[in-house]
Length: 178
Image 1: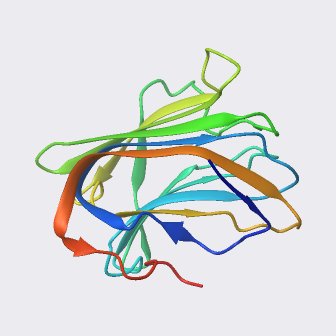
Image 2: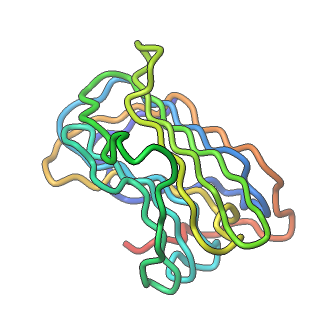
């Protein structure tokens, strides 16, 4: 378990991945206001390519998935039932889990996002997205908790990444802006 209080700098897994099949983040109880970002980024720099899940546990989160290539937004198409919830509801201080699943075809990447309170069987949010291009599920996993109101507390109980490791590239520094 890793707990941090009012730490707003990003941190990353040292390993990089040629292909990521799934990222799962399990958070314990939290305290006070903070934003949460979980990103899969190009290990040579987030400016090249980044796919970010952003959540505000104390508020609804509109458009939780952001894709950038060369710092320019890339269209993220939400698939499925148009009447289903477009935003992630307020999570609060309860322990929760974020799961990202990836698959690609010859032209696109499909991302399945699931956010759930650990105390409930039903997810708070589920969505499937399509992004043009196949390189999105590769790179380094970065976690950041920028916070507009300090102090705050976050407890990371588990971070798992399933995929194919890139043995020729190990991170020396976090590929994210300060």
